[in-house]
Image (cartoon, rainbow over all chains, first blue to last red; front, side, top):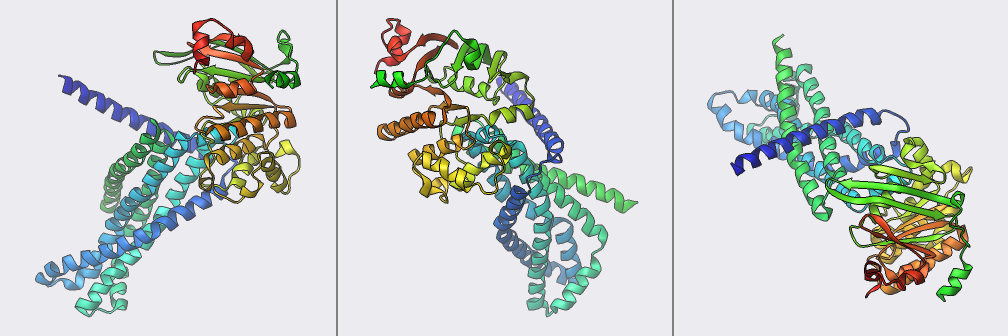
Length: 260
Length: 261
């Protein structure tokens, strides 16, 4: 009985948090597009987020490209379909793996960073100090960060995809004697706008989710310094879950368009 | 020495309500079943140093946050410089805040900004208050000179000691030449020598800029040196009020509890 009550209470808390997150997102749209705009802080955040995550995204993308090709080769050879390798790798990376893996890496790197940074600012009263000095902290801290992640994630996804394809091409070049030119020509022939556009739109939503959850968890951080750690941790967990939900919805919608 | 300071301080007519720069009436604030403020009343007069003392969790910080609009009270009236804080819209509140300096308990310097940027931050929103400014450097330098830290302009907060951070925060609080400064536990977490330095700076700043000060503290030494009048906050109400000398002589056990070491 006690366990059931505890479970119900947890479910209630979860939905309450989802509601608060939706309200937070609503506040972003209400405040975010009204002047004055914090361009300088927005650019600083773009630089910080892009710069801080770039190496991680590139290394991850490169390894994913390498591993995917190495793992797929034996099976494709078995079916005499190794010439389909660039098509298969290209489509899977551009449509799904590139955006999702880049977003997950950024969720770990950026969402936790934002959660910890804003959480620490909340705990040390820096957010209050900002408000007292006449600056809207939501606009200065939250809007700039959400906009920066929304804009930077698609750029990181494109770079990650490029490096992943390069990693795959490298394996094909070593193992299958396929030239880089032939490999990339085949990849680009296989890709259509129908692959690129949904993936890019999806990346914007991933970026928005990363910024939104990171800011939400940090901005309302409680319980002192312990709360900062919790904010960073739950930001990653919540963002990762949200990314998969967005991915499912995006794939579902794009699938409807493919069928039309 | 204390008597001398009191003679130097501004003479205050406490019956003259029009002289009150802050007027709080019947302020109430609860968090669930926890009734933090239960009808708190307070007046701060022009040029006065008023100390509000209370135990941890007695609602001092809640009261000061209500005063600057960081928290909404459940009921009551707060008039700051003649304006009802609760009735003001965001724009009016921000304009009013230009006349209020706030020294936070933990200094609250922005970690990602240099000392200079920390001091320039309040000027972004309130540029018009200081007239046409093409270069903020003289203002930043003057504020830093007031706290003896002009050499720290390009340092990051992490490069400063606790006492230096508090002094930079004080410089940030005075950069807009406010009429009122709120001090939330100005000496907490500092060693006795640094505490004395901060108290000295608070007095110098009051003399230099003619500000009114509301000091929230539980540091008896700070209260003794800086206060012209004191309010003891107990159970959410102003339990006792008077000068330091009057209160320390009180035989009320709750008042005595504040001064026992």
